[in-house]
Image 1 (cartoon, rainbow, N blue to C red):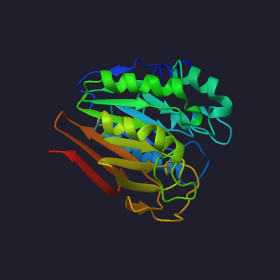
Image 2 (spheres, rainbow, N blue to C red):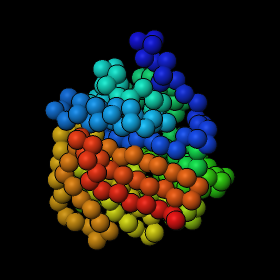
Image 3 (cartoon, one colour):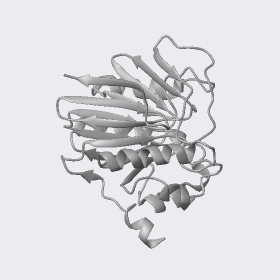
Amino acid sequence: MRKLLGWLVFGLCLSAAAQRVAVIGDWGAESPHRPLVAAALREQHQQSALDALLTVGDNFYPRGEPILKYLQDLPPVRIFPAFGNHDAPALQKQLELFKVKQPYYTVRLGSVEVFVLYSEDFGLAQRRWLEAALKASGAPWKIVALHRPLYSSGPHGGARSLRQALEPLFTRYRVSLVLSGHEHSYERLEARGIVHIVTGGGGAWLRGFVSVRPESKVRLKSPHFLILEASAERLRVVAYNEKNTVIDQVQLGQ
């Protein structure tokens, strides 16, 4: 336990060299593909070292109680988690596990700054905090990570109240990418000049799509994870399936 937690302890800033980051969502479930996705992530790390791993929530099913085996299956890199509806019942335990003081925070990863939000309880105080953090950021790339998507063609659909609260801030302060989960599928959308990626295929049982939104560009019912590669000039996002085959990619910048 102590050895495992040693690599989970982190500060909220990595050096400018930290440019290769993995992203998983809805991953902490005992499904057949969860260990396959974890193994594919370890293979990625062995081929070219990952600097960190972001989650977009639902880290442990069904009620958020941490399962250390799931963590041991992942590459031994720093984890920066968002928290979802399945995490909420054991939120305090996860905050302690991941050494996070509150469920929303920022982390600087080289030329990227990630703004982790808590979509399960988004109120005025968190909105004020986010606006101040976005305004103060000098990062070339601003990325938001949260659990519930603003746009989605999946069964849950996009969170309209969150979209109304957040989208004006995202456009005003030039957020480039929004990462979310909640839907157990992969979808890339574009709205108001911002790329939205729903990445909920890390471990939970997969679901399909209900009503395709006009903003939707790519939709896949597949286990998957993301790799972000960033420089000051460009941000590349590649989605891989559990066999480490590229299933989608998008590049922002030059």
